[in-house]
Amino acid sequence: MNEELQALLEKIHRERGIDLRHYKENFIVRRVKVRLRALGATSYRRYMHLLDDDEYDRLLEAMTINLTSFFRDPDVFQAIRDVVLRPLILAKKRTTQPRLDIWSAGCASGEEAYSLAIMVHQLLGNHLPRWRVRILGTDIDAAKLEQARLGVYGAFSFRGTRWPFLERYFVQTNEGRAVIPEIKRMVQFRRHNMISATPPSRFDLILCRNVFIYLQREQQLVALHKFHKALKHGGFLVLGKSEILSANATPLFEIVVPKARIYRKKDTHSKLPLEATT
Ligand SMILES: C[S@@+](CC[C@H](N)C(=O)[O-])C[C@H]1O[C@@H](n2cnc3c(N)ncnc32)[C@H](O)[C@@H]1O
Image 1 (tube, rainbow, N blue to C red):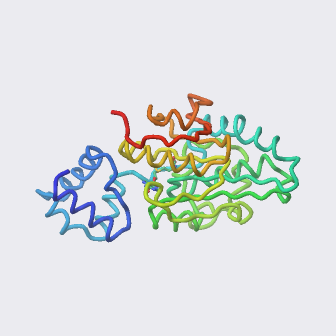
Image 2 (cartoon, rainbow, N blue to C red):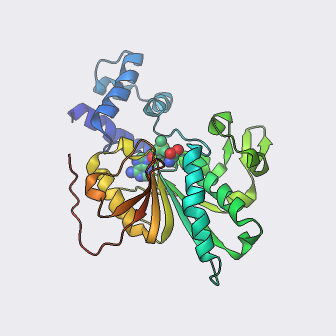
Image 3 (spheres, rainbow, N blue to C red):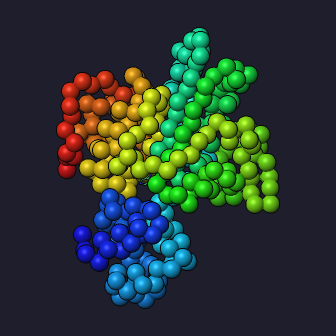
């Protein structure tokens, strides 16, 4: 990678805690160049001197790495409900203390995690108090996590959402629609880097959608190994609709619903290679 670009990414990491160094180089170059052109900067070094608070916002916006919405890809959420959550609930409901553990990895401003909480709330209905439900949303972007914890959203977060019961789970405020406390209580948000940090553990379901598109193959595989470890026996993993499991990860997961990118953990006792195929 170009040394000046490397220095720019290190500055962003140092000053904003956002680590773009593992992202695909051509993706980064394309997006940063849009900002260079907009400011008339002729090199990454010059651009670095122009990187004030406003420009940081514009740069990160240009990366569009944080875009998300409630029930993004509704067909995927339907498949999660029918193929993952309903059977899990059925299998667990007779246990003395049933629990559901769900991780939204790369949750951005939290819409995905809250969507899952709403869905679980719908599915469990009056039985919810008997269950221990843990929904964890993690991201590396501290500013996005602050928005997630606040839980107040503008119309953009609801684009394409046609879920009639949505009105029930939000109250209109001057700042936007606020998630009701009952749903907020079901979700926790934490800063976490899925590539370098030790993963939290014992999940029934992990969603990591629209994150791998930005990551290099090697990093994807590192994350997949961590997810494999973090899942309970037979647990589920959901990737983004445009993301596929790399060939090296097939010993870790089997496909359950190809269109919705739903995978299931395979049990493996052997140590698997971490190198990615090309
Ligand atoms: C496009 S958003 C996806 C949001 C949501 N999962 C969805 O599909 O709507 C990608 C998110 O991944 C986060 N991300 C990127 N690399 C990460 C990493 N190494 N660890 C944790 N989060 C990461 C970004 O900060 C961003 O908020």
